[in-house]
Length: 281
Ligand SMILES: NC(=O)c1ccc[n+]([C@@H]2O[C@H](COP(=O)([O-])OP(=O)(O)OC[C@H]3O[C@@H](n4cnc5c(N)ncnc54)[C@H](OP(=O)(O)O)[C@@H]3O)[C@@H](O)[C@H]2O)c1
Image (cartoon, rainbow, N blue to C red; front, side):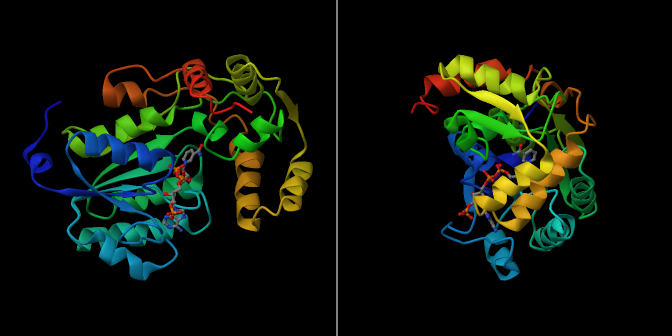
């Protein structure tokens, strides 16, 4: 793939969630390529807040392309409308290309994709499976460190994706020709159950970590006890109660289609994260 004229022009990319799991990596990779980056988040120098639309226009000023990762979750009720309104404002503000981070098998996420496609911008969708990094940078880190991961999920297989692969796909879409109008369904190279994933982390980190399947109601009750916000509990209940029903238990070729290489394996993620000491007591 070649770098096109527009991409080499002096242009700035707004990276939403620019300090988060995917955005941080994308911002770093773009910067390493010599691209101009503006971070978009509540704590950024030009603050951007999904919940305060008055912050959107200033963040979009003089921006050519945007990496769109929605908060709190692309599958959250109302997410599609908010992402759609943002995409329309982005186009009005002169943005040429939107790269949307989406989720698999989630009606609200697929509605958000449709709203971005309808915005009039060039678009690329990166539709991702569960992130491997949920286990060291996300909501499963605490349970891993406690030594017992109790989740309302059984033998369903999930092709966990390494977020470095998501970042590589997004950066390619933002800097190269040939990715406009593509939906890249990105997954890891094989299915693992959550029990398999926890066992791999236990092996790589040398820690004893058990996995227990619990009923959804018991899981929600523990979250309430830990004062997790109600909307987060609803989202996790939706993910575990509905999305992990086998509909996503297949691998996809998005990483290979976008990058011409295989996705990283979960074992490599676990080995490298353990080597960095992320699960050290
Ligand atoms: N985790 C998964 O397995 C998975 C799988 C598929 C898709 N997804 C999707 O991935 C997206 C999340 O991406 P991520 O995991 O890279 O992000 P993340 O790690 O959850 O990112 C947090 C980032 O979002 C910013 N942020 C938080 N609240 C915000 C708000 N109200 N307005 C603006 N920025 C806000 C934070 O910065 P500040 O605190 O400074 O605002 C930070 O930069 C979600 O849409 C989710 O549906 C996740």
